[in-house]
Length: 382
Image 1 (spheres, rainbow, N blue to C red):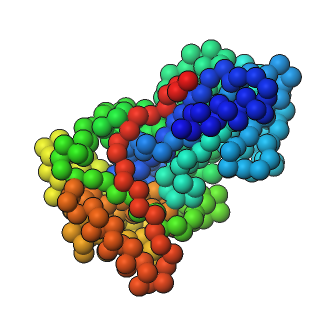
Image 2: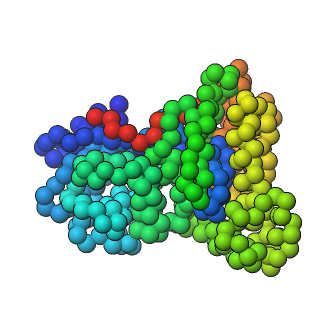
């Protein structure tokens, strides 16, 4: 178990036991892509795959971050943390401490040993899992008493302002707040959440994550450009955010946008918000056929209007649907990463085999196939 591995490495590295082990999961977004930074709606659920952090306090003002997946530990001076600079992957952990300091919380030295089991660069929010696991660990060790939603906000601040990745807050909210057997219906404007039952086994279906093995990076990819295009469209329409445009007023709003590209970006956001609301309603009445239809419509919109899909993601979705999936779509920020398919119990193997065969025929690397069950958010493990 990763909790044991992280604790054992901590004991070996520091010649003392960790004060505790905490974990936070990756997430898959069932539907609602790129809506989060437009104040919109999302519907993610937590994965079983998590990042574990064995942690202990230090009295020398040093933040020492070590990972079972990296060769060398990274050292920071807690009193001198600042955005930018070196540190690579460890900046995500250091950024959480910095964000807590910026919010007025006193955080001293720390030793952190991390075991990350969320696939990297796959759109499953490995960075948020790391940030949230560190967040709950530091909150507990320094008795800060922060609410989970506030920890999620600080984790997002770490990624946005310390690391420099302009992501929305969905990933951190999902990693912090999801519960087992549910999807998290999140309003990114009000931060209100609702746990929507998503008991896949009881419904006779499975959620299959298809990892294309095509890595993406929010810092260097087209994510920032898409966000700027959405902001441009909102300004020209005359609304605070694209969340404020509804379907009935969409066509008139788009006529105010000066470029075709920004119009298509805005169209995706407005229609995607509507699809999230429709998916929540469909889940409440166990209408899986409608959920599947909305998933496919979301993928088409992401592919054509938002232009964040990839050939591998398109092959994954098309092959899954041709093999009998109820629904399928790319998930995550795009430019690679994962797709998710809603599949009947009896057809999981057939869908997985069909996707693998399609990848081979296209000359792509063999995809990863990850059965996903809605799982528990951030927690203390030991």
